[in-house]
Image (cartoon, rainbow, N blue to C red; front, side, top):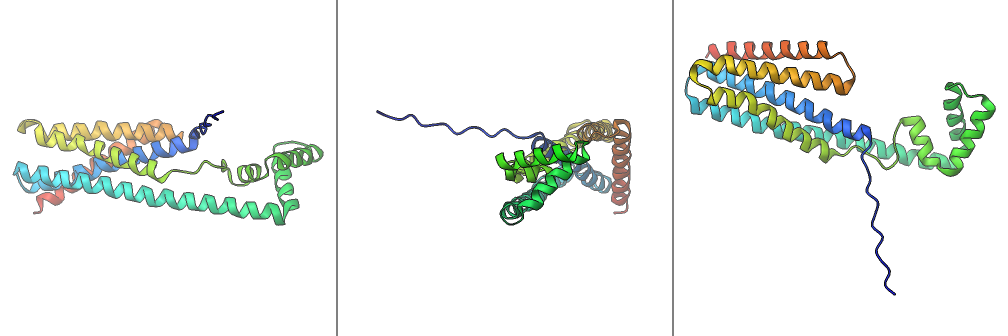
Amino acid sequence: MMMSKVKPKKTHQTMDEKLNTLRAGVLGSNDGILTVVGVLFSVAAATTNQFTIFIAGLSDLLACAFSMASGEYASVSTQKDTEKAVVEKERQLLKTNFDDEVAAVKRHYMTLGVTEETAIAIAKDLLAKKPLETVVSIKYDIKLGHYMNPWDAAFSSLFSASAGGIFPLVAMTFLPDAMKWPGTIMAVTLSVALTGYLSAVLGKGNVKTAVIRNIIVGIITMFIHYYIGTLF
């Protein structure tokens, strides 16, 4: 009699994991927009050679995308290693200082308004069933087995930085001469407004403030780089 293979259960991403990937994407897109338009404005202010402008913008787009991706990978990898170290620490504490772990869980529920007697009962019950999962969740807000994925963050940042930089690059390269500057300024303004909106939504911040802030930063970035380009 042949035994059928049991398919492993798929591990679904937590909301924090999804938000981390989206955050990397939004930040990558914003950086892609601003760094590429900065280079484009500097070079375009210094020369009218269209091929030179395009190559400079494209080179910066690729450099920015890979730089953002590597930075996100390193950052999230460090976070993941820290989370794993914390889990191992708590695993040992459950063996050597079990009473202290019970006390920590009890204090958590007491701060939520539960009576001491009930809090002790909850703590003992939870630590009897899921000890490690309980303590890392309560003490560090970590969901056991769900660590931030550095590859997800890296690829999200790589793609979004590339996509963000495309807007000013295409506008400056392919728009008619009379529309190059105003068209690129408009493309950048709309793009950074969108990333400001998304960052505020993801971070549960003030949308209006985030959008205005991003637009102001975008305008300042374009002005500074254009002025630097005119010096040369």
